[in-house]
Image (cartoon, rainbow, N blue to C red; front, side):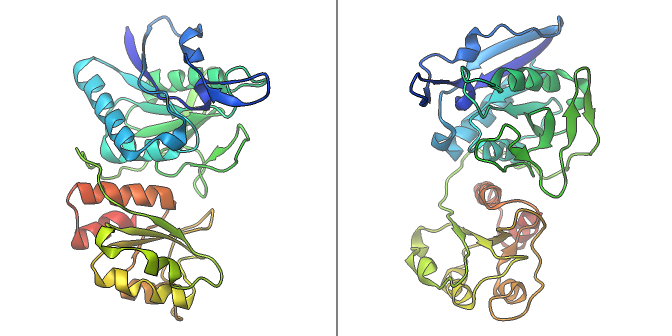
Length: 322
């Protein structure tokens, strides 16, 4: 008998639409009353871990979830874990778990874009599909996965791309890791083998600032350097800033605060190509760290995790790059 632990954390997948069309948090998770048809050799152990709309989820909640997963694999003979989660921050929780623990057995996150009683609700189907993926032998050693709408995505690169569409989760540039068919779980890409940092704390203040045309140093000057542990910038194009915005970074970099740069573009990676004032070449020379391939919200978590692991200096620059 293969034991699969299910951790419900809240989100649309566990919510209900009222008669007036409002989607609200349910007093009781409707998934707990759902009768699922699974393989005979599966034992589902279901736990109401939390009941949070995903905008309420914090890094401390993610750390608690990580510790619960570790305990399950270590002490409870679990062979896979399914986590149901709200979609707004699902990719961040998935990335956090993937960056802080690595198990041979699968951890799969899923959610829904339509609440349990809406027409065309996708929650139960995604839930069942996630169980199938978590219990499949081919899902081992793949890291943390996100399963939605018959697609399997790696936690590192997946992102929410549409506000309401059931096909919202995509992996720009690389595409999905695999697919779920009626009868099979199919993988056609290898997952990234990244460094894992097993942290016990998740403290720090790291804001995200998005660049825009005509941006000046005003936002950067509002930041209290004494309260800042790091900064993530969603830059233009391949990694550029308006000249006055670049000037605003000087005070922060002089205080030896790590500044991470990603692109606000949907696809591609950051590169220090341009050497005009505010261009990526100049920013790199100033000490800005270019982070390739992940978005701002994940870069923020990666830096937060690294700082809590005690990584700094050159080692931090090398860790953040990819």
